[in-house]
Length: 393
Image (cartoon, rainbow, N blue to C red; front, top):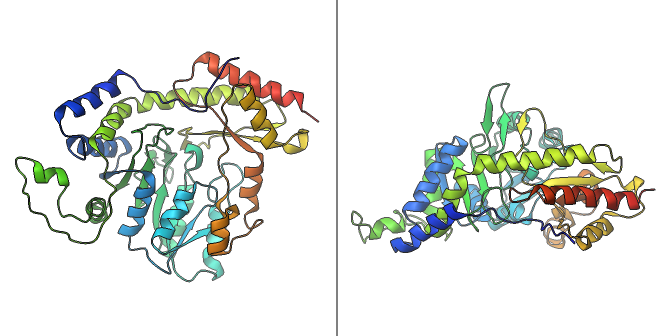
């Protein structure tokens, strides 16, 4: 039986060369490679500043910290995301305030955000934190306008969205990373480009960039590697209490090689998504994802939704059958308001966000990554269609 894992990283001789160069240099922690990765990633997304960090969770934490978010503040975001999004809000004593999704792209619904802000139910809204789910950019034109009207800062969770772009106000496409006040990226093993573990914060604001860079390494007033450079000094000052979120040169080296192939990776992901959409469009038991006309979709995930009324079995059974037949599938995401900790700590309950719950009950994520062969793609398509046909009403 053919086997297609859910993900396989696309690594090769360029990544090996970059890492070996770091190992042979004798400098393996944060240093010149990390700095170069920051510069090249900033150029890639079109941002003025980029700060490399250990992971996207740390990026989100630092972004909110730099904005002064604290106890009693409210951060508006989506329940349809990984826990890190809301967890970073909780680290600072603030409250994650969930808003339901727009049904097609499964991103934050601007109309519902506006309704909440006008309702008077919030006491201290400070930040709007949209998540570009699966690699499709949110409706940032409307969300930015809402944020401006209500005096909110915008922190984008771009963990899925390296390479995604959005047409702003009818102008040219602008890459995610150069849109909100701060954008937070993930380079986890499954992401569109990887450093094995890692993240990045991008911004146009020099004060925010400086605060994040300092806070990412214990609040020291100079980078650690500069203390040991021939031009550096052993002395440092702690300007404020910080964190340990710096990215090593070993990780950054992988990222530098990956970044060179980012556009190639994205083209392949889009090609696979088109093949899936073309194959599944005529099957009425399946709802395919579609990219909006004003968005360049990064296709981090390909999230297929079942039309449950047309099938004799549910989503969980379909997932189990596909896995048994050699197709690695996953589910993105379990809505956070269904998780025990968010119910106990913040009072959320099942039924609070019906669009998110409906999407969760019907969705599954298929393999989509550049290392997939044409045979892999065909096998996934054939197996999904055969499994669905066997269980049609």
